[in-house]
Length: 287
View 1 (cartoon, one colour):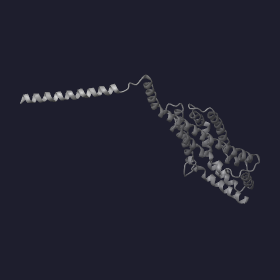
View 2 (cartoon, rainbow, N blue to C red; view 1 turned 90 degrees about the horizontal axis):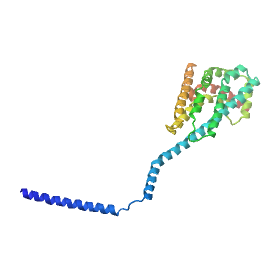
View 3 (cartoon, helix red, strand yellow; view 1 turned 45 degrees about the horizontal axis):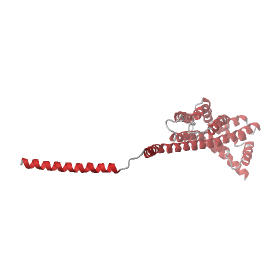
View 4 (cartoon, one colour; view 1 turned 45 degrees about the vertical axis):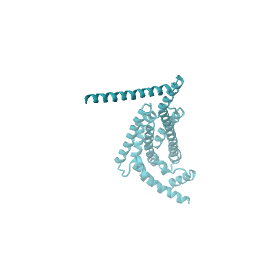
């Protein structure tokens, strides 16, 4: 019995060796028949592998650069419109009212409180933004400019004072409703600037502007690499602007204004309503 088992084992072993030998011969034949790549082919393969490795990041980088440029252009356009609106408030309403004594200077100052200062701050900011845009490249930063603007105590005090004056401005507008000279002046301005923003639309813009900067920064951060020189600057600017928005909301609560937050424009709804009443009176007179 043992002899039969031993014989079977030898037979199986010999069979396995034959299979392995044939397999080795086949593998040798395949290797021998395969073309050996020369140095030029190897170099081409290496270059292709490198391109495959870097093509996605390069595509993403180009997309980020284009997106950042688009955001800064949008920010430039809206800032230009904002500065122009502030300029109209100062040059077409505030200064003429003071010069012509249409209403008392005290009432003029109450209605347009801090508007000239806001105009001055944003004119300087717009000039700096224009200079940034003229030199824009892939390494350009915008966070430093936003930090320089909104970390200043003067800009914080200007905006919070503007909001603090809310009730005073509302009362001043209410007192002006019965002034014929005030109504005639607004009527003339409406004729001269027909199709443009009304006084009501213009005067609420400062509180509507602050949230826009937060949105721009969020958009910038989405398309700015962590190692870009602008990234940390944007984070700091985001913190400062958010703090300013919260401070304005706190002022709103302190002056006893209910409803939606100042950053959504709710604070000046009553002022807007008062001006809308005056505007309706003017339109009726014009008709």
